Amino acid sequence: MSLMAGFAVVAADIALGIYHKLNTIPFGVYGATRVGKTTLHNQLRTRGEVADIKKRTVGLQRATRKSVKIDGDARTLKTADIGGESKYWDLWKKDMKERKVDYIIFMIDDRHLEQTYNLENQLAWSYLVDLVCDDYWYIGKKRKKKKQFPKAVGLWANKYDKWGKKHNHEGPIEDHPIFQSFKYGMQRLHDKGIPTHKYIVSAKSDPEMVYRGVMTMIKDY
Ligand SMILES: Nc1nc2c(ncn2[C@@H]2O[C@H](COP(=O)(O)OP(=O)(O)O)[C@@H](O)[C@H]2O)c(=O)[nH]1
Ligand SMILES: [Mg+2]
View 1 (cartoon, rainbow, N blue to C red):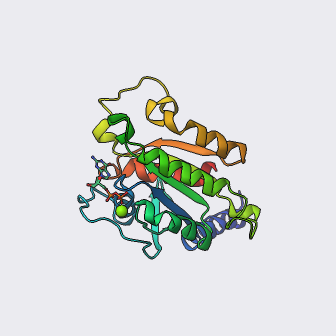
View 2: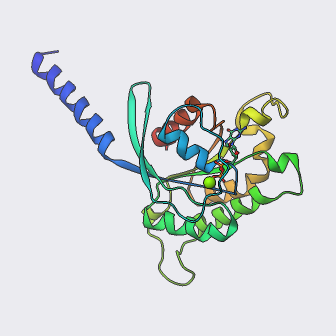
């Protein structure tokens, strides 16, 4: 390669790096209360072990930038922390709409495996799927444009450190029973042309898994 061509390649590489740093990718993080959404935000803010969170998140917090670096690749994303109680679910819509969220991480934990009568994860999920699949932002009013649908929805099962051993599973994680109850919603998203990303994490203690998951969503979808 000539020196000039080599220089052009390096310059293009640097330009791409700067672009990735400045261009913030809007991520939305939703899910039932206490699944670990605030923990995930803190993990993205400061990599490492996240302190136990006692306080409940109230309403919609301001969106902030987070940078994700893995294998020498760096991206900047923006997320806003929102409460998971059902009274805040309409704020998921506000967040999705106003920030034009490109990627959604929907968090669940193992509560539906522990207590089969506990339907909090499933109820929050069907609310989200309805919201995403709806062609309108408000019933009968403004129709969503194509780019207002997310590029992908991640279904992330959190607290793996807690339930991984007990619900041990051989074979690909996509087939893990923790995802079983969410199949119908995933099918509905697929029918709409929106891919889903099943993933398992320990947001509190395993930054590697979290960062890798985010990068995979950005790169693969
Ligand atoms: N064992 C375990 N606990 C977690 C994990 N992530 C979050 N938690 C705990 O779950 C509880 C709820 O977390 P929080 O982030 O407040 O959930 P949010 O309501 O969805 O924002 C807190 O006690 C966290 O420390 C995890 O990966 N493993
Ligand atoms: Mg929270």
